[in-house]
Image (cartoon, rainbow over all chains, first blue to last red; front, side):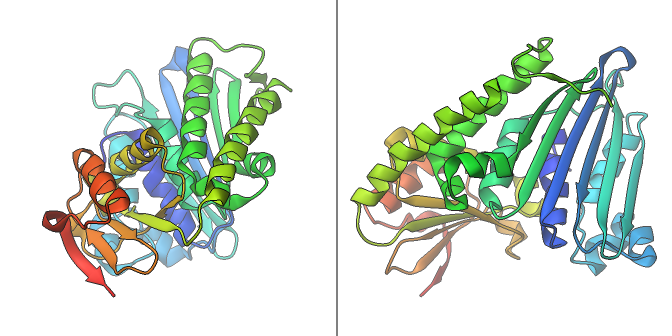
Length: 194
Length: 123
């Protein structure tokens, strides 16, 4: 079992990498008044056919028979459904996969969010050749990170392997997330309601 | 956009890192952390974070930190490979964040393999 949502995100995102995706979008949407968090990981990877899709949520089938999907999906599904949320996975061959999980934050079994910045730098540093887009929305305000934008500033993708860059990014993400959680500022949060 | 101004600082961080990297000759050391479901559940992300923190603390610049998927020895997770130029690839098993300073100090700086943590060696 994975400890918190940030660990699940890391794990699900790795599925996307294994599915040969070039662009992975991680979106977390939090609605404070409804005590609800929705997590979506979408990729443009090779996708799955109906048969595999019907089996991925079943740990007794997937964990042993497919290498494409491990125990991560059953873990996430169990976590979501265990706290009154829902889980959904959509996929089509050649087009990619989208995994969505929602959580009721006022449920006693709702996992904590955990260290999102650590998950993100692990993904950026681990797979610098992918385009990572991360959005965290709270009541419509949002923080967005696009790895292409970061690579443009750095000048090359190789620099993402540097620990100083990772340390800077971790601080930057932490700072932005805490600003967002505290109610946001005009500087960082954009009013993009969706 | 203020976000861009912030990212400009990142460019400065990168520039200063590059100067020192360029000053050193020879190949780069690679550290590879296994980041499959097994690794993540065993604490690989925390080990990775500890490695980054330790390298930064010690000002070690010429090391590339990378990740890989399941290495296939899940019972030994978290797994960390250290590859120094011209030396065998060393695989450490059951690595905890507490082991990281020792591996960095002994192996990366002094060049001595931390024998009690080694589970594999590839020449």
